[in-house]
Length: 443
Image (cartoon, rainbow, N blue to C red; front, side, top):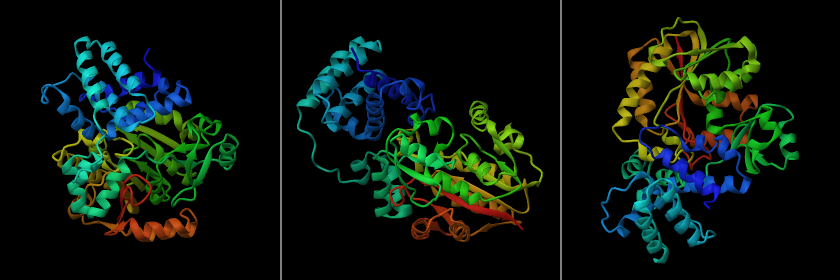
């Protein structure tokens, strides 16, 4: 019998590696079938999925030489079973080799790949008998199992030390951070045995040190939200307004902060994905008619200059979230960045037309790539001279004065997150995902 954790991990890995899907591992690990597992099995399933994806390039480098023909094209099921077994053999000392090998073979058989069971068994047995590799690969990409083109461009754009910090951060479990949305939330979590620490820079953020917050009453009642601290910071920077547009609103974490910070405002939450927008509508049902939901392609918006605050958190490559979504490194190609950039420029240009004189627009991404960030903002401002950029430093200072950013956080952000008047959080330099933000205003 196959252990439930391995069975679900195999299914998720197989689904994620399907090139026809954009499913993300962190979302799939919150699926009801995963939540139904015991705490121990759920933790193992998460470790197996995320670890196998994080180290996939290195795992393949160990597996391929053990094949009779290293260039053999394997079926998705056989390749997934080999990677899953290899990860356990090379990275999880507490799992007996016979369990890792035997259940990988059974997973292959259950997937209908009977002819491949012998291959999976033979390769994993060879790997189990071989000495564990001890030499550190000479390249940054090899050491941290990243595509060479991606590691090299980070070194060019941010310097070798920062690129190393990003790659190392990507290979560790992403920090779990929550947003406190109720005055009794922290006490409720403490009573449930959840251990918390202050956020790295935001007063309303807490880092989860131990415990499963998703199974607490505070989480079920909406007293807290699980949200990366960098994501929270972007929404905090947006500030306040009376008529607000969130142009690319799903999944809704930043929208919720805009609602929280602007209790008297009327807010429009727009997104191209109806299913995700419906999920937001359910999560924000308590807001009543203060929030209007609109299924809309942000790149094709036709707006009147009526909004005094617009958040434009555009779809992007997501390279700042690889610690959370390790499969991004395999799906992204260097040529994709130009395509993302063109769409982002159209979205930003369309959103600017809805900005009232004196209004503010926050443009943001969870990408580390200049083509999606500074270059988008510069290109759109060059084509629209009636708009200008506001230095982020002044906004961070205002948030510090108001107490929304604590003193230690203000110092860390000033030292590490400001670049050319914009916000840039670097994973590994700061303990959060990589975000970019610029604030624009209409003269």
